[in-house]
Length: 273
Ligand code: AMP
Image (cartoon, rainbow, N blue to C red; front, side):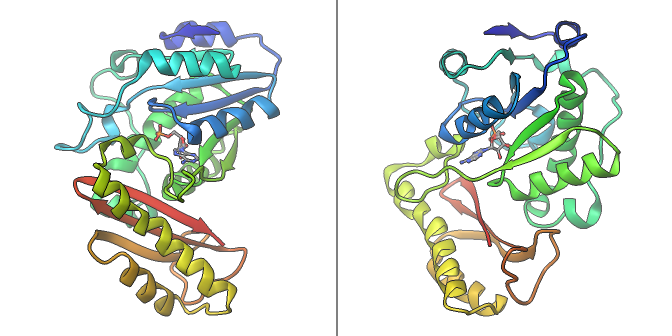
């Protein structure tokens, strides 16, 4: 596995390459969720690039940029053992200069849900994803369904800015008890880890109701909020795949999303129905 930190060097390395390129952007502290993206990229492409970059512009003041888990050596090993061809490991000053052009998330979809509790977060996400896609110029780029709003906005950006990359959505990897895997799970104490299970359980309740034919959004959300009691809920929403609020679950076109704080840790989860 080749490790490159300089964007120009990576571009140069990939120039004249006629292989299909699969790209998996991450912030490191790799877990099984990241690995499922990497495995899919390896299965579907001739060359796989993974990036590890804790992107400063998507963290708001007071958020966990400085304490975000970093496991550089373990991550390198994981990538190398899983068959990644190139690990792109830039520093912030390789990616950002001063007074930069940036991508602005649309008001309607970028400033609701997670964008409401973290105003400006998605501008940082879209800007770094745009930069990374321009550096790697992949055939396919892999993103987790767990970050459904991020995935929706990236898909929108690629479409609206007429970019040629194909965005691939990958299912959420979970611990055996249902907790969605996340680099931030390491922040949870033993008790908080138990409390956090309310999030995936609330989604299971929603799934159970839908399979019984209960499709009314309000009815489902009430039951989910009951399950989530004790947590600081940021939102529980039922949306279409285009991220519009829907009054009834439409099978094949719905996402149910939860964001809640467990102690000081904000956790996201969702289910695609
Ligand atoms: P992150 O390192 O948290 O920025 O995540 C990098 C990529 O991995 C994003 O596309 C995430 O949506 C995806 N991801 C994170 N957690 C999971 C998970 N549990 N299952 C599948 N994909 C995930």
